[in-house]
Amino acid sequence: MINLYAAQIESLSIHRVGNKSRNEGIFLSENPYSLNDEMHALLKEYFLKSFREKEENYYQFVHEADLEFHELYNLSTAIFENPGEIHEHSKKIAQHLFDQAKHPHIKSGEVYVVYFENLMLNNERVDGIGIFKSELKHDFLQFDEKGNDLEAILQQGVNLNKLDKGALIFNSNKEEGYRILSVDSNRYDTKYWLEQFLGVDIFADENFNTKSYLKFCQNFAKDVVLPAEDKQQEVMFMNRAVNHFAKNDNFEESNFLNEVVENPALIPEFQNYKTEKAPKYKIEDLTQFPVSNTAVSAARKKIKSVINLDTNVQIKMDFINPDSAEKFIEKGWDEERQMYYYLVYFNKEEKS
Image (cartoon, rainbow, N blue to C red; front, side, top):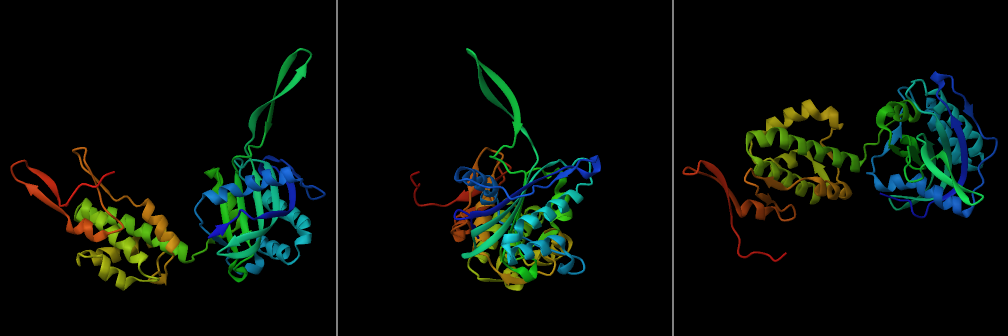
């Protein structure tokens, strides 16, 4: 979990990179940018706002041979070892980004390389490197007094409310390729940013593993449990799955199957589905891992617990007390009406 509110910008370098395939150039500033208090507050919010608002999906630097051959990994290590030299290293970062702009769709823009202090990662205070790029320019009006009239002047600039691309490299887990967060608002060139420039892959920690496994379970419930049984059992399967994760500090797949999959016939279906779909969720060899309570809470909020009926009636199941959904709701078939029904037991109606 991250907390970025106390973060401070200690150094800022700004460069401009064009599109190499269109023969556009690169401009490297000779000196770091000097920040005043007002600009510090504005740029800090511009750089970090998107990271506070998105899910924490961590990445790590990877290289097919060895991390010692990874350019950004080496530059990050050099900066963390000697932050005072960041401006010279920022030029190499900008050059590296420029060298990856080989597709004509990649936009030119400003590159900001920032050294942060007081970033909080899992309750630990660490330094960080921010690499940001502004690409899209927006129209805005300036006004100038001309005699007795106001003249409107159309200009273009960067919208400080939305970051186009950004990466936060935390000085943590160095041996594994650091912990990295990425933002990319312009998804047409994701490979350019994540793969070609950053050179990262998913950091498979307990948060990622928990979230991925629950997402896999959700799709298994939709693709297998629902067709084999009904909507109630689909909802109840996910109900049991989420609660199994919530009450266990460590996940063990055999225990999960015994407790969550009530229909024994679905266990081989689950295993076949995992064999087929596991690569999509990066859980191929995942049978045991620590559970992330943060990921469980986030998943619980996203999973729908509502049965929508074609008679414009909704039945909302209870994910906090799963027994109530099983004990007090029965499904049946009415021969006379030739319709299914749900029978709901209760003592009194709760006041809203």
